[in-house]
Amino acid sequence: MAGQSDSRAELAAFLRARRTAMSRDLHGLPALPRDRTTGLRREEVSALCGVSVTWYTWLEQARPITPSRQVLDAIATALRLSGPEHQYLLSLAGYAPSPHLHAGTVEPAPAHIQRLLDELTGRPAYALAADWSIVAWNRAYAALYPNVATVDAADRNLLWLVFTDPAVRELVDDWEITSRRFLAEFRAEAGNRLGDPAIVALVDRLRTESPEFCSGWDGHPVAGFESRERVFHRRGAGRLRLEHHQLRPSDRPDLQLVVYTPLDETTRALLQEQ
Image (cartoon, rainbow, N blue to C red; front, side, top):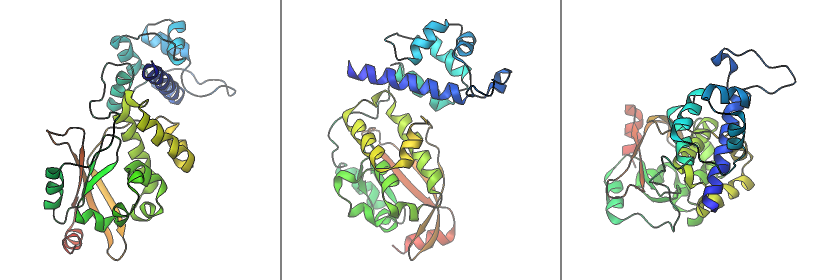
């Protein structure tokens, strides 16, 4: 099946990327000759995991084999994967599928979600669908990022806008860091759904339009969401310090609600003026 083939290919590419980026010092291994790439050899990973070199090579070649969860756990330990990276690896093998990202037509957020966003006065907030389409937002978010209300619905996707809209680069204080972070979070959520038509189409479009996306995506970054400080530069309002939060409604776990709260009184006052 195409979905299984896509997952195997992604799993193979992910392992190769992490293996070649692995610091040999972490396992007390000597440096490689100058004419060799950095990272671990396949035979070194196989020895650390207790599997044959042939079997591990097949795994990196996307052969139709079925690794056990125990072996994947051992590989994750050998490659020193983070928690989100470990879960991503398991999801690609079918052990921890993401329940939130799925194929299908993106629909508007239900009325009760819009009402909730509207009640967050002075708090920029929006709702993301499974493929990161922005399906609802409030007045404060439209004031922060006006293009959300005017962009074509087909392009109203957070990942697409971050990498293709020049206004986002002006708005975000640390675009290079933020864009890479979003890319890693998106990939972690996608997991074994990267073969879904909607995700394939989005990635293909971004590859065509954004060299930064290409270089970032090909590095196979994976990261879980963490609430954190975000700094924005809104025209006419100056510098805004906000804290980035993510919530999921119990009755609509396929939606993410993203809410920004002020971190200082100046920001709070500026948001209340909207």
